[in-house]
Image (cartoon, rainbow, N blue to C red; front, top):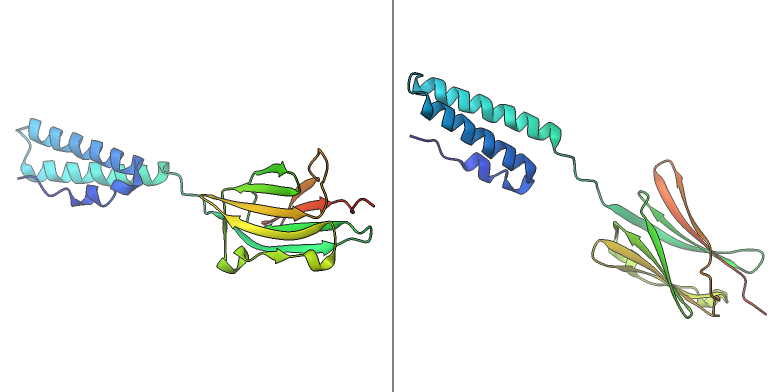
Amino acid sequence: MSEPKHWCLSRAAFGVRASLVACVALAGAFVSSSSMASSAAAGRAAAGDARDAALALADAAAPAPAPAVEVIFTGFARRIDKGASIFVRMTGEVPVVVEQSGRRLVYHLSGAKLGVRNNANPLPTGQFGPPVSNVALVPGNGTVDVVIDLTDDPGAKAPPHRVVVQSGIATLVIELPPPSE
């Protein structure tokens, strides 16, 4: 009699791992059923050894899923030249894509998520004067958007930004120029 295959079903979520285990188990069952000369106990042992070897191989070959980068917090600072700096602190580095539409700047952080629900609350910076009126983090499907509303049109070119990594913490820094007078 064949033994139940419940061990294979519990590993089905792991993709490659389940495929390797199933292939080796089927090969072990085929070898044990085709060699009538060997005893049934030896066939089960060979299939069990093959299954254990496949599990060990699959564990070594399957890459560990990368943890999602969490946005820790967002900050705002006025500079001496009356410009502003906006920074977004994260647990790791992610690609940043800038989109500009009128007075709104959107920085797409692909592969990021909000660490705390409270980070979705807007950062109302209008009380501090130009060039920024509001900053918000907007979570999406596998991304977080940093939405910056400006008091003046920034021109054709988006303000410069950079990502600084120190001690495993990444900080997106956006430098906004002083308002035009």
